[in-house]
Length: 136
Image (cartoon, rainbow, N blue to C red; front, side):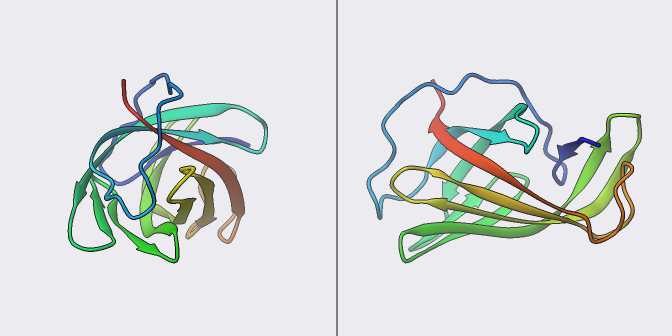
């Protein structure tokens, strides 16, 4: 059963990712990006991510937390809520780990349920593909 993810206080917004140039490795992530997440069943969800540099190898993502750059890979580790397709929101229902390449901006998100949520049991895991692109 598919879960529509609503992370923290952030809302999911539809967007169109254009093939714009990714930042060079080592360049800080800054500004508005479109995050496209592709689920195992093939459907995609686009979200607006707003980055602010927070130091060397650090980028604050509005409503999500801090991503850290280590060995050419950005990582964001946190907790969030879910919005179930059949209705209802469950805060802090999931643990997520986003990881993406600093050059290609492609990566994955590993999601683990902290509680029973949206028809999936506590401990349920899902790995989704992700891509970031500068917003038009």
